[in-house]
Length: 510
View: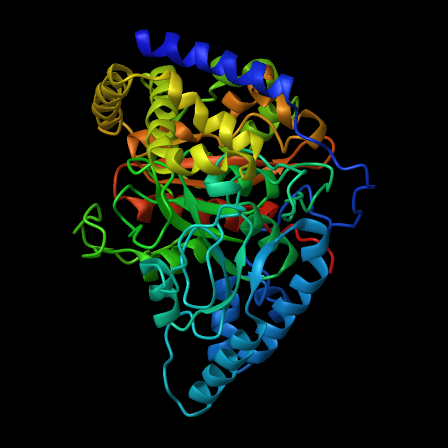
């Protein structure tokens, strides 16, 4: 198709430009730290230790209700963890410690009085700095800050109304685009499993902060994998909901037709709790759906669930980590043990939809940024300019053709889900990219080994959960995808898998 030729040419141009002006790399030694060991054979069920339970959102919520812990203790622990991790990992762009402490005190007083402050009462949360908050300005991870808006984005307001406590705004790739620019005076995201590697983008601070314990849950955005990629690279759990399930009002746009707001946490159960709060129609965002928000019943049973399996090795096999095949096979065995029926499939129009994602998202991003590019180009990250600048090579014909490809792909995916209940793939065939290779991800093919953008164009809900490690103990992610608005089954499958495994329990030693 013509769209593939345009995209291939643009990708080659991008790689050339990056090679001509590579990202600068720090000469300082990387931070070192230990990570709590993860067993190779995971126990069945959840731990009964209350100290372990408060490291998950749902565990902490239950402990608060039982009076086993106070919100002020949870918030102080999160703030202390943030103090320790932030300088090494680049978790935050702004922090709201005093406001968080005051909110925690109010929650504890309400609970002591027998009141119900909400399902997220007293729980510390991080907010990606592409979503506006009343606590402080939104920087979008850029020196070219957007207009100051101190209103809560709809999803943030819903978290707060449910009792959640915002402890800070987390680091994002600049406007959700590209990779870090170490020449700019902004925090650098580093992977909590190996500080010489990237976290993945663009919800970088969320993933690192969850592993470090700087908060128990977070809100991210995902236009081409920005929730699922860092979740996979950092060993956390993240959900891109169905397009229209969660309001985007108050979020800074990257691609209007591919942007999603969604939860990030330690477990699928935690993500279900967050989604139950933030999902639903919003008059401020006309793209939100009136589809009812169901109860997320997580019963641990996948008996009779038909799951289509696509290894996608025809796409990213050339750069796949050697451990991927075995790790993915073991994950499939766990799904089978849970009662699922697995069938081999091939995702329809995969290269075409991946190409359409590039054309649509970058074209829509360029319409937003072009005025500032013209007058403040030097203040943007070089990678942001190069990535969004790809859209200058696209024409109106390319954009329309990409929309036609999208429609054909959505129809084909809909037909696929007539035959299966879920789809499972690796989230990526690679682990987190080292900084010394980051400027060559296009050239090497590693960029295309992240299997996320396809689902932004299709619009289906997609969940990434940890499924194991590479030989050098870097996390790998499993991606579970459902039919539109069937987050309930996606989350049930993710939770069931995590009941049998403990890959999600890996934490940086604090």
